[in-house]
Image (tube, rainbow, N blue to C red; front, side, top):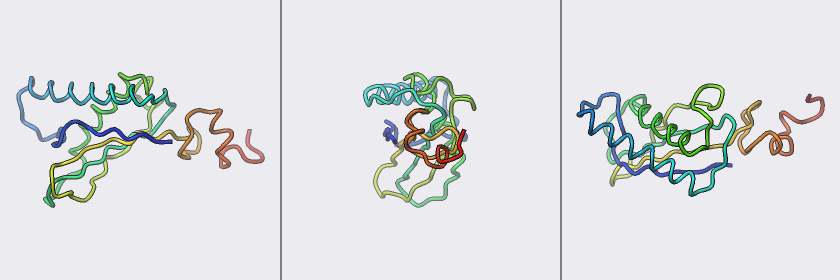
Length: 146
């Protein structure tokens, strides 16, 4: 099971940004609160070790360093914690992923985060919780599994 949340910004937060701390704090708060609001409105339940992957489709074909998208990903994950989708954003509650750079869209930049429920044992997609996984995940719960 997965959910997609479109971010309210067209330019990602970057490790290379050199803006005033108040401007940066405002952009950070805007993204975090937007993700929290949309996650609550979508009814995303609390998940055990989900994957949350940031996707960025820039407006043009300039070279980009995908690692500069990590601050935007971090803020979006903080929004998921704020919404109660994650108990915390530490390694025990969340499976981190690298952001994905999508092909340019020729218009404004677009950022979105895909939250995927996964089986905490085998990483099979679709497992919202352990009971659901026991029914659907043959990899973990086939014959001989204890």
